[in-house]
Image (cartoon, rainbow over all chains, first blue to last red; front, side):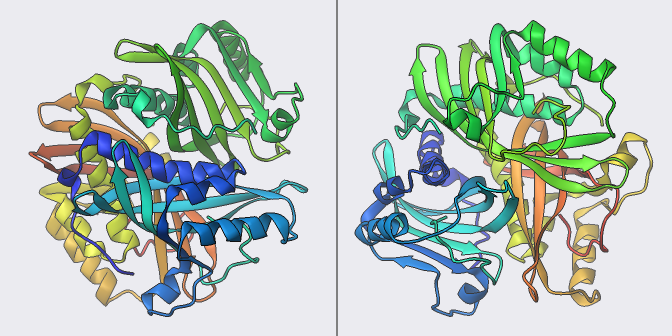
Length: 168
Length: 168
Length: 168
């Protein structure tokens, strides 16, 4: 894993931290509240969103589960999820932890955070931790708002139990 | 689920966010530290505390697992838990994530946050994720303090494995 | 459990809270990113780091899983983990929640927080919640930095499934 041991807590003001934190929380909540379409609005038009195993990432293997090179491509993927995919009714619950700023160039902020996704199946109510991992984000501050320039989500497990139908 | 896609990060000052965050954390810690009585002090005297499944809430079904209409009623319920209920020794560990402010009128703040409750049984040490869900809170700022006006906790699973003996 | 019901949100400034939060997050991330050596740098040279079950702690039983009385001793322990121990490849993912300030004397800050550690095995990809618990920390603010003076991590389960090879 590409590690960063330089803590940069003094690179950011409290109000800027809250803007970044809220962006990361909003992405998670949009998915949890089944308004997945909204996450495309949180990505820069030329932004990139990638979901990949930590195992592949550590070995520079290119294979990713999701790899969108623009907000438009992410919108297409979500549309296809809504229209085409057949899957058992389920929903996600995100837990986010440990948001740290690791680098900054002007309004471009690099962060690390941990995520955990718990899935509940509608039919039998089964509850399961399906993902844990680290998000490596590059975020662009835009006044009192912010958007993702790059969102790389590295999950810990090598196996994805089922087809990943919903973005994380 | 009643969704809110308007982010309102600019509605609140950093010190106000910390007051609200600490209120939500304190509720969780009081339960985790087995001083459940203390949560009644965090609810306005005429406040409401409801625990309900997301499934029932989405369908406007009235059935709730807990529904207290005042701090006094919550105190009664906790007293009854201490005196009357017989249950296997257990304790909770709360994880809270994603506290976002979604609306504000004066000192009244609306928030969303995610919770996860992990239960450990005293006897055999079994560890289990028993709840995940979203808290929809209405909080009243009172100077450097705050209290819950309404605390609605929606859990994801349709089934509650055992009788809910401890508030969450 | 030694409980603290006094909330002290007004004892600390937003920027001080962020310094403390970042210290706690950095400890977790150093372990998750497999640069465990770095946690010794986050402990005062005469600092103490203890991992103990809540059960033993509540009964004043002295037995701890880890009990280092200095940063040097912690470094030795990590070195021994790297050199001597044979264990199945695995890594941790920390979730931290509920950081609250409970007391303060000058630059010495007392905090409580909850932790959850999820372990993923490299070979079969098994994902498991192996720890939940409460950290009781005493932190020394040093300008825009901070270090642990005492870090007491109380885990909820009485049983540790396997030998604890990696610090938490």
